[in-house]
Amino acid sequence: MSQIISIHSYRGGTGKSNVTANLAAMLTKQGNRVAVVDTDIQSPGIHVLFGFEKDDVTTSLNDYVWGKLPISQVAYDVTTTLGDGFNQGEGKLFLIPSSSNTEDIAQVLRNGYDIEYLSEGLQSLAEELTLDYLLLDTHPGLNEETLLSITISDILILILRPDRQDYQGTAVTVEVSRKLQIPKMLLLVNKAPTAFDSEQLKSKIEEIYDVEVAGVLPHSDEMMILASGGLFTVQYPDHHLTQVFNGVTQKM
Figure 1 (tube, rainbow, N blue to C red):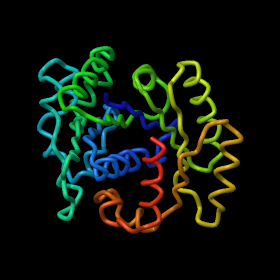
Figure 2: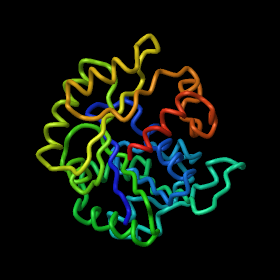
Figure 3: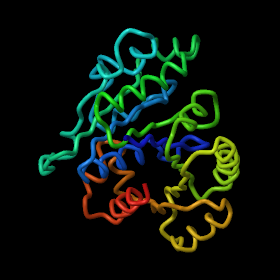
Figure 4: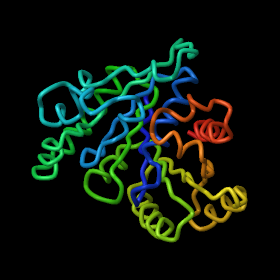
């Protein structure tokens, strides 16, 4: 039985896609079958972290939601992005990207898509690929598409920065998610200044929201320099940030 996990943030710029991709990498290295779906159809981008250029995405989630292809036919096996030293074993990593073609994005913004049909496709994908984990990289904020992703999730991971705007937006999202009765909710603090005490920050945020903080990811110059040019946990397997990502997967 696969676990559907939505990785979400109220505001953009929180590093949501980077977090999603690296959590997927860690889960795969632990021997799981994992798929990442870019449900941020309006502003896709997670494919870049797996080494895809725009023209490399020849089929996408758009082709499924528009009824052109079965969802399993738009899944790319990206296990090789975990590095030459990765002993695949049972672990497999798949990516279902969204199109970054300007015309395709404009069509989504203009006409939308059948959200229930997407939900059906995600369930089918989990079964056809015999997934252990299905990670959804959501669109920031609260809209109809995001609420559906949250509703069908077994786990919701909310990403926030130690920033007042993020605090207020996260409070709204937590309240909505509780009303939707999500089985499990976790908070993940990203881009925390290194001057902050991680444990104190964790305790403060858990007190504010009464939700477990799965980890505090400190600001990293190495992450900034990498600039979405690959998976951080692959490039820096011994880094403290990678250790935090690993700790988060244990909470999942």
